[in-house]
Structures are given as C-alpha cells and as structure tokens.
Amino acid sequence: MNYKISKRAASLAPSLTLAIDSKAKQMKAEGMDVVGFGAGEPDFDTPQHIKDAAIKALNDGFTKYTPSSGIPELRQAIADKFKRENGLTYKPGQIIVSCGGKHSCYNVILATCEEGDEVIIPSPYWLSYPEMVKLAGATPVIVATTDRSEFKITPEQLRAAITPRTRLFILNSPSNPTGTVYSPAEIKTLGDICVEKGVLIMSDEIYEHLLYDGAEHKSVASLSQAHYDHTIVVHGFAKAWSMTGWRLGFLAAPEPIARAIDAVQSHSTSNPTSFAQKGAVAALTGPQDHLKGWLVDYARRRTRAWQMLSAMPGVTCVNSKGAFYLFPNISGTGLKSSEFCARLLEQEKVAAVPGIAFGADDYLRISYATSLANIEKGLDRMDKFVRGLKK
Ligand SMILES: *Cc1c(COP(=O)(O)O)cnc(C)c1O
Image 1 (cartoon, rainbow, N blue to C red):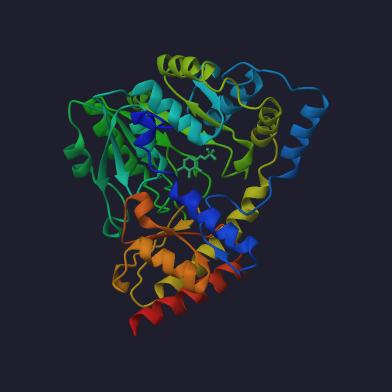
Image 2 (cartoon, rainbow, N blue to C red):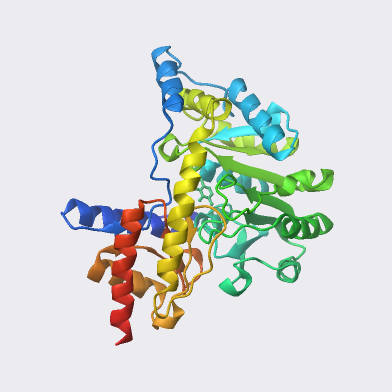
C-alpha cells in the first residue's frame, strides 16, 4: 500500500527527547545500569492531597463530560492564582484548561497563526514550538542565541526578526532547555517591542515557580494594559506540582482569543479529564509546602551538576537560574551533540539530550530532576568519557 501522508504530518520531526528517553528505558529494561539525564519531568511524586482530591472525585462519580474549557471551579481557581501571584485580572471565561501545557501551546498557535504568518522563536527552544507552528501552516523564524548572552534574545535581534508577517513571539522564561530566566527589565524591553510592532506574545510560564539564586519571575502580561492585550500566558500543572501524567495545562488570553481557542478545543479534545481537574483544584487551593522542599533539592543538585560539568575539559557551562536543566557547551570536545550523546550512551551508559533537538548543536541538555547520587554517578562517567576523547 502506498499511504499518502499529509504534508503537515510529513513535515514534522519526531520528538528527540522522547526518543532518547525510550532508548535509555529500553537499555535499563535489558538490565543495563543507565543513568538518565533526559527526563523533562520532576522525579518527585504528586503531593498526596492532590491525588486524594482526584480519588474522591472518581469515587463520587465525577466521571462524565465537563464543559470543554474546564470546570468553573478550576477556571476560577486559576483566575485567583493569576491575581494572587502575578497581579493579573482575568475573568474565568478568559481561562482555558487543556490537556497539558503542550496542548495549551498548540491551541494558541492554531487559533492565532496560519499560512503566511511568521512566528519568532529564540533558540535554543523547546523542541515542540517549531513543529506546532508548522502544523498550523505558519513559518517558524528561529533567532539563534548562545551562552555568551546567557541564551537571551537581545532587543536588537527581536527587532531585526520582526516583519509585517510576524504574528507571534514565543517567550519561555524560565526556559526549557537552558534554564535561563529573563529579568523583569529584560521582559519589559522585549514586551515593549512587541506592543510597538503589534506582535502577539505567547508567554510559556510553566517553570514560573522553579527559580534559584534570587531570580525573579515577571509575567509580561502584567506590565501594562497594552502588554496584557498582546499576551497569552501558557501554564500547566506538570512541573511545580509534578503532574506530568495527569495531562492538565491552562492558559489565559484576551477574550476573543480565548473564545477562538474554546471553539478549537471543543471540536478536538473536548474537556480535559474530569477527575484530574478536581485534583488540579486541590493543587491550586491547597497547601504549597511541597515546593519549598523540592526547591532545596533542585538547588543542591543544580550546584553539584554545574560544578562537575564546569570541571570537565572541553566543557563550559552557564549556571542556570530556573527550571531543572543545565545546557553545557561541548564545542571544546570536538564533537557535535548527536555524536556526543550517542557515544556517551553507548560507552558510559549515560543518557543526555543532544542540543540539536533544541536547535543548538554545540550543547547538551542535562536534566537535574534526578537524585544527587545519580548526578554524581552520571557526571563522573561523563567526565571519564570526555577525558578519554582528549587523548
Ligand atoms: C513541560 C513543558 C510544558 C508543558 O508540558 P505538559 O506536560 O504538556 O503540561 C510546556 N512548555 C515547556 C517549555 C515545558 O518544558
């Protein structure tokens, strides 16, 4: 059979992070002692009170369709969160609950972009953004940054990339894969340019709560009415509440955009899982104490991983300020990222994600959402690998 695959689907690259992760898992299943730095998810369990709320919802028979964009109670809890933590005022109707932060991003891009539109994405980028833009028929415009600017797009770069076709600018701070956090002043400068040029901003703030060294998160939407009018904030429960498998994300948008996304979602996935939404209400309205302990652990792991990476010959590493990733530069080893990662996995049984997946071939992504013992074991092995190359 000669199956016809649509141009849209055929243009996509499969997710390399998921591919590395499954190769590492397969090697583990075969009994190999693999250390994984590939995970894009917390290694902590979902807090018990959140699970209890979902279990109760199930037992209470809360197992049917809900409104497509989420239950009113959850949309209200999300609006309250934006008010309390970000100083942002949204009506529940401006909030859409989706099947993950990834789904929220896709909804935004699908509802705002089409053929002929350009979307500015700074690299290194979260690998799904360009593929989502292509699925919408629009064109990703990649603006490369390096460790010399801490992986931050400069105002000059943003201005130079904007054309009359620019529809959307994707901002992700704290960043996956680099851990970069833009300062409030930097956020304002980039936001001002978008407002001046009439470009919408999709601000992916899913790592908002994971900050180190006194870094501060500022939502671009909160800077002024004009910034608010130009911004769609994307968020989710995966990272700060460790709910990756629950598939729950949310977004807040100006009303016409929220209405369009509501229509898209109502004809594609419909509502996110009913009882998971009850768990999410507990996540937002219940105690947040878990986060303090997690942040202490992440900070300790980050410091150790950064020290070990920085001591490797041919490797340099900017210390990140947020999320749970480091993005070391390996150009001094003479290898590009795919070969580096393939050989590292083969020879030393250490899984890291090649930077090329994020548009940056001289780097690797190391996730420190794993125990200190794993970090020390895995980075010792990587140190040995790198020293072996030098001979
Ligand atoms: C993890 C992540 C998301 C959302 O993930 P979901 O599991 O779909 O909620 C969104 N953006 C970035 C940058 C992420 O790393």
